Image (cartoon, rainbow, N blue to C red):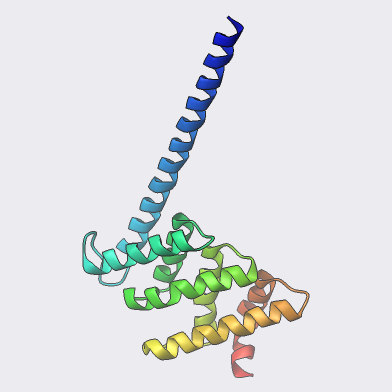
Length: 173
């Protein structure tokens, strides 16, 4: 009887663990899809599900989510901040991977890193319709901010809060 009860308990725990894992995977998938669909619907000109732009963005987000320390849901949240900044699909595809680099270097979550980079581009008046120039400007912001936090006793959030307040002075300087 003891062996049977023990065996049944082990099986029940095993099945429970599998079900819990499946539930978490489903929740993560739903969270990703919800965030991703919400973000792509807000892109200028509208990116429709099944379109070439939609498929490119989805592939990028899934690739970044599988090849980095960030989940696909986190990457989709980073995408959403670039959309809120008014970027087009092509610009987002260029800038989103840079957000991952910034998040990793600064220890921020990806959504916050994307938010800081997109806001800093505006604060320093470094927006550009030229993709190459925007990429250079983005790298410059990331490099300077990352170097600053690594050389001083400050965090990225503290530096960014200062940047928001004194952005005009920084830009003039």
